Length: 117
Image (cartoon, rainbow, N blue to C red; front, side, top):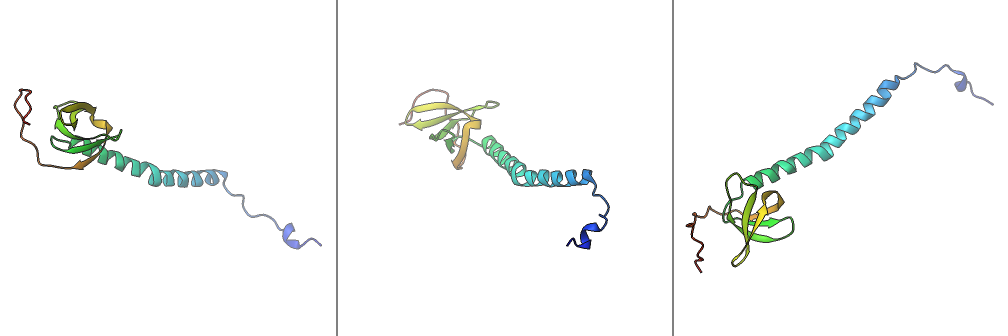
């Protein structure tokens, strides 16, 4: 009891090139829109945040240390952060994970190392 449908001739053979390229293009497009594009935006936002850090900002490092920026040297990848009264550490700008509060720029202090407590 074989039906006549099996005996019919097959249609034109599909193009194997299109069967491979179309799904690959779809995978690349999905990968771009779901992974690459959001990561690029996140990287750009982080770069802008790091470039705009200035004295007086409260920052959080990638290690979780919260401190206040005391010195931002020109053309340097490091900033000085005060993490406790009188405790200052140098931190790489790229390790900042967040700027908790933006403040107005603090007027520069004199070069002497006296504390105004």
